[in-house]
Image (cartoon, rainbow, N blue to C red; front, top):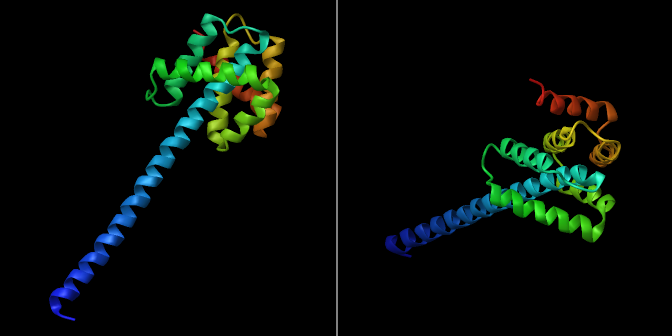
Length: 167
């Protein structure tokens, strides 16, 4: 084998290794983007399930949900995306029932910090319209249970959410 052939062989190996590394990095980036989208959708669905527990989502609840998502995602999601995810959450709840969706949301959100964020946004939406009603409180409890969080931890999160509305 000549020096030129050897050099081409080495170059070919290097390019193949870099291509594989690049492909792996690209796949990891795509997976991360897909995971982030799943988390966003699940947080919105969690808030929708709680806000809708009394049979309707008020304009104030919807606005709080939007603002909460805006904050949780670091201002990286726009109102059109939020509305689309909200519509998906409504359709899933209607098709599968709320109880099935609590488990679905818990399966989509495995990270404890994201679970707490979902409960915070859902709690904030529930505090609108004069306070957390019985049905919304029960929905928050179901969600906390699906997340494996204690009632005491839920109450702490709800208190944080309530603090958002104090002057």
